[in-house]
Image (cartoon, rainbow, N blue to C red; front, side, top):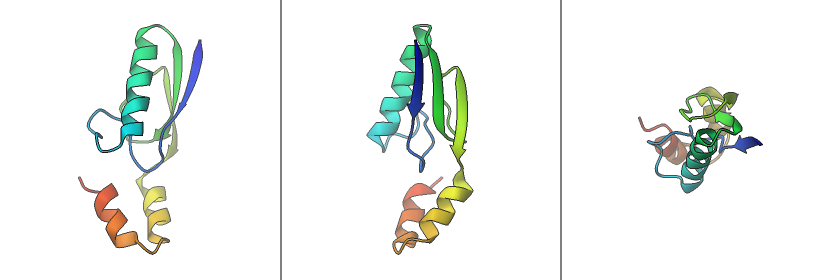
Length: 84
């Protein structure tokens, strides 16, 4: 089977991103389906580290930062998203 997995645009899909349950769900699903021999296409953040057939980048830190700066809560969100 072929799976197309969409992740959230504001966070990379990787094991270390444990604050978001959806990111972990996508990470584990891609890993499990790839292990079973399925074709998995992951669409998400450029810094994603996920076991898949092909990763397609749809966003990066620059695009996310521009979007956040346009919102009123920008200072609060930058602290959450860009803590490294």
